[in-house]
Image (cartoon, rainbow, N blue to C red; front, top):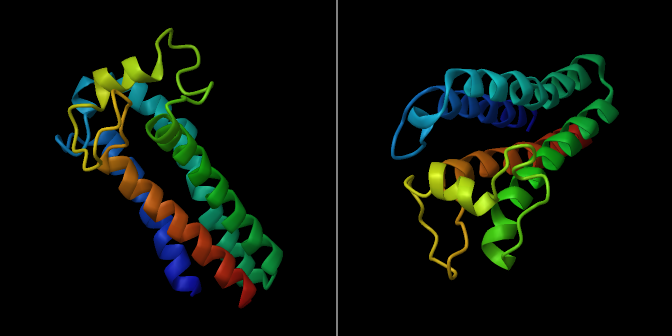
Length: 156
C-alpha cells in the first residue's frame, strides 16, 4: 500500500507539472497562459503537492504513522479544495469566494476564457462552468493518493 500511495502522490505532482507547463491542447489550455503565470502556479502549488509524499516517506522511514496520517489528510484537503473550486459551481451554481481572488473576474468568466475550449465530458447544467477532464484526472489522482496514504499509514 505504501508504494501505491507514494506512486499516486508523486503521479499527481508530475501530472500537475505536465499540464501546467506543457501545451497538451485540447486536454489543457496553457498556450494562453503567460510564462510568469505558469511559474507562479508551479512555485506555489508544486511544493504543497509534494509535501504529502515527503511526509509519507518519512513516516515509513521513521516508523511514525502519525506523519502518514498527516500526509493523507493534507492530500485529501488539497483535493477537497480543488473539488470545491470545480464542482461547486457545476453542481450547485455557486463559485468558491476565493476562486478568482485578486483577478477582477468571475469564475464563470475565467472558465469561459481558459477552460471551456478544453476536453469536457460532463453534461451541461444550464450555463454553469463544467469541470474539464484535465482537472478530473488531477483530482482523481489526489483523492486516490490521499486515501491510499491514510491506508498505508494504518499499516506502518
